[in-house]
Length: 258
View 1: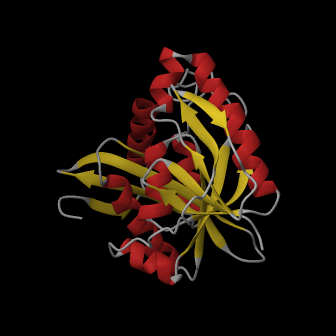
View 2 (view 1 turned 120 degrees about the vertical axis):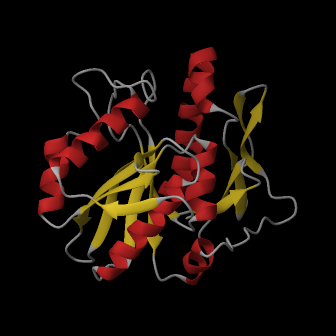
């Protein structure tokens, strides 16, 4: 990516820079920082992934992850934060290259299923696929991004050698197929979620237009979205359905098991 340099980090000064960057992004309470510099130092020392993205010599993004699952070794990307558009993609490309160089074929991470831009980025632009819905995964989090909301997350898997992933990272995301007349299992009506018909081979599950703004302007509506998404999307995944992509950046496409 022109103008962005991504590299692995080693020194304590660099880890402190990452800690300050993450504090700027999440604005946590004093005793709830996303990650401490000493933990980043320990991760890097033991062969795990800690990287920073620089633009004009200034840190504009960082990511940290750890090796996971001895039966099927992978990298779990624990935290990634950026302050400029496009930097997240550069970090993911670097992370993918690092994993392949270390003999790993998959990366996992979690994200908030209610944030549209993250759903589009993870599922469309990167080609990752959700594998589980995790209710209140991190418990209460005291920062400006998550405060006042449950920390439900989608766990996604990024199969690095999958043809769809290879095509996506090279700029050609796989087109998601939506059958004509596919019902909306969860829709939106005046910022509120509305349950629909989930009894079909392929259904759509809406994402709110801007859940982060809604948390501030209408907390009750935001909590309704969390509850209904947990029931509908989480319920479908628990039954064995799979999310195949995001349609028009506004709906998850969910396919029931045959």
